Image (cartoon, rainbow, N blue to C red):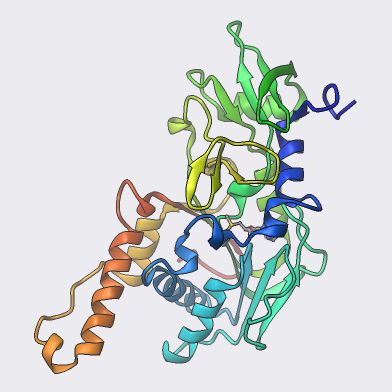
Length: 329
Ligand SMILES: C[S@@+](CC[C@H](N)C(=O)[O-])C[C@H]1O[C@@H](n2cnc3c(N)ncnc32)[C@H](O)[C@@H]1O
């Protein structure tokens, strides 16, 4: 017998954890950038702009270290490293990456690397952090959670899945999962991902910081806009595919961001406008006087516009918690 049914049928969170982080799991074998593009990987100049925003946030709170959880192959950390030298006043001295794979061979030696387990679990050594900005870009969406469906009589039941991705209805939902659904999911929703594991993962991450800021950046929804049929999906080689828990594709679902318990929740658009201002095009005269500077400023303005676009990346959520470090900013 599996955990919740006969051999082959498992609760989605169990199958999902195994498919991504098991011995032969998707993220053990594949770099995220092989299958999908994210801002942190530096689409255009987006990684550079994101790095600028993070350094600005760290400086605002006088933080000297940035720890990136779910660091992929260290793409964003490399941008941070390149930029902290040029962003004059940056006091960020230490950069640390955390992911489930071994340290990438070509990672510059002054970036530390910490090996993690996968999903909601974080490494034991990530603890007692002080003077630190912890950032997790597109981590919580790959923290597995149960998928549930609502019957005609209103009762929630688990959705079970087999290795082919076929689904069937399982036992009634009860306990903490049911409490979470009652609090966070409105009546019009027929299928949902239970966000409890993400809430716990966020709380765990916050508990690792004694003094500093925790920031998670992800796509998600609030109670008033929960998707009617959930958001679980797969990605492989740059395309969206049906979610099949066999290790052949990424499995991801949007995050119920308002249940995380963050101190401050805002869109990426609001956060970046606050930290970096609004995108402005460089003066045209610069194109002949200093063509390289002109192109750099143009590319930065384009990236900032892309990262803040309504209906696109601008709708990403920034959830922040402050630990013993003064006012939110
Ligand atoms: C969607 S990718 C995002 C990668 C990168 N942050 C980006 O935005 O391009 C998710 C990453 O989270 C990592 N991950 C999942 N669970 C983790 C954990 N508990 N600790 C550290 N990394 C984790 C995966 O290995 C994968 O690299």
